[in-house]
Length: 162
Image 1 (cartoon, rainbow, N blue to C red):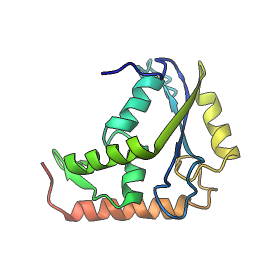
Image 2 (image 1 turned 60 degrees about the vertical axis):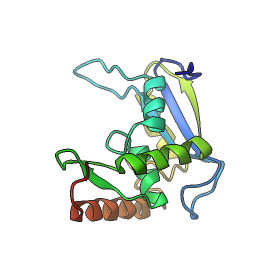
Image 3 (image 1 turned 90 degrees about the horizontal axis):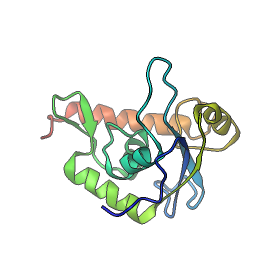
Image 4 (image 1 turned 45 degrees about the horizontal axis):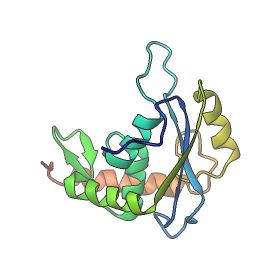
């Protein structure tokens, strides 16, 4: 594995895409922000920017709301996997999404000791159509919520995938 330029530190990260995941969104601009770690009152998080960004690039839709959103917008079939409670795009679909992200996704970050103090402010002040939490005011929110809901409903109607 080659070394990552992303620091193993706390902070805020932002995603933009060379090609937008759907025609209604503009390419080349910030579409999503996230934080690592998230605020946890009762324990210390082991998350950091490097782990979170790596998971978004190479993880699966069950552990990354960004991957879930992108895959749904790109029309990749969501499936129930394992016990049937988790939903991912399956091995082939996740590989397709990872390839699309490798070609189109770009991430930037800023180190911050308590990134959760910035998250609400960024979401309220910026147009971030791929963020759902705290972002009902965004004009894309209802469309994205519906796309993800329909994908989950279709997944529930299909057999559990290996």
